[in-house]
Length: 415
Image (cartoon, rainbow, N blue to C red; front, side, top):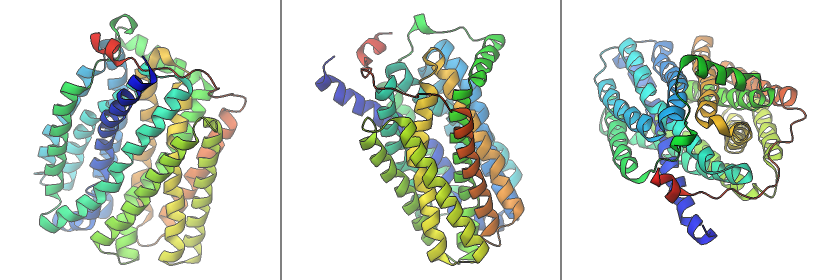
């Protein structure tokens, strides 16, 4: 395939897989502006409302644990399409949830459905690319993925002008239905039958054990997980902190959230441009440096009691670092195990979202009446991410300069 032919194909794949990846972040971010009003309508405390976020994140983690090995065994398309159908169904059920507890349970199953999207997107990337080509593709994927957090809170804030929080879940169901229709016709099967591994519990556990024993894979995965955990601490606590502590309206909160998400998008654009000029390990170090600096700034703002002008720049720096940190950590981890792309993608996702699911209620339990609890959790996690990278991946050369792998979608579609 010539570069001219590969370019549009790569762009199409970025669009398809990026749109798929946005569904999870949109399912998280779109209803965040409604947390205070949900607490009032459902007569629930802040931690009970945040529980629906926690169960969704845990569902994302466990769903990937199932979808990864299944996609290695039967291909990428079937788990994806079934998962999206389940997501649509339970989005509609979330819209009529009578209590905070019922919503939390429905959100868990909703997340199981969307989890296949994360696994399939990363696994397809590994099916078709390797080395620097995969690093560049993952960075492009993060760019499109970054649109979800930018659009979702703003869209959620506008939906709240027209309807209640329940309307956000109806909108999510419609978005899921559109994606299901497009992907059913446009996404080819990329996992060839001869490369598939029969699914069985013993083999799955053996594969996961092999991945966890690879300290380099684990180091990159934990660095990404702790960093994403800090982002989920922000997602979980920001609506209460910014609206209750700083007095912002739901629409103003949506604007702040959108600006921070735009920072992730711009960082991803910069990362895409730098990939190849700089190696992924170097870019990952830069992302970790940004994250720890932002975390330190948040902690200082919390301790010193600074206002918005002190708090928001540090928050922007930390959230922006994700646009550099996550694609490089994922590329470095995934590049080590091409023979088990689905399982590696699943384990990477499990560690990331499990960290987020465990962290989200901590922020609520620590209190949402001041900035300090959220700031302390976020700062601590950025330090943990840096330590995981430094201690576990020392000595790894990472991705070296090698000929880019070229995607072969026509060949993949034939299978």
